[in-house]
Image (cartoon, rainbow, N blue to C red; front, side):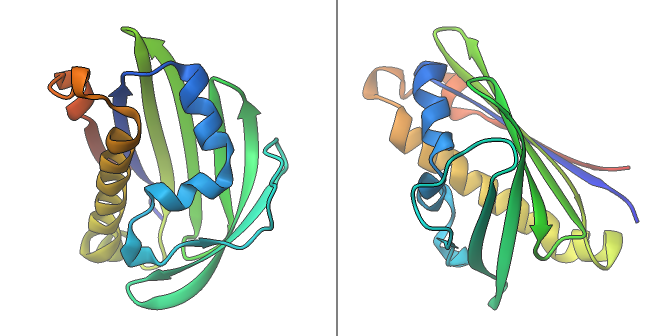
Length: 167
């Protein structure tokens, strides 16, 4: 079964010391997840983010309700963390988040390595576009939350890069 790799990056005009704590609070994930997923964090607050933490969610994928459980497999504040699906719709979902201070702000990169049931055909027909829509929503939500009018026209901020490859 082939592995698919999705990369997204975004520069935001605020320090890493402000960005990383936002991601360290699992409750904030709902604010950057598109409504079409009906995403809800089930694990009671407060969730202690650390390597080994388990977080449960419920969501809808293409209208089908499902549960998703993730393991925080790496926790290196304020530089990076990795969440891995333990239970959910994918055969594999490993999502690395990195945060780098750059040009007076934070350059964030998401690297997702996944394997889907049904392989390349299901990826092409459904998954690829869904993942792109999710990360586009996420980018737009983060821009709304962390941008200010002084930097609204900055190409570093409004761009973002997406790439999906199969290997």
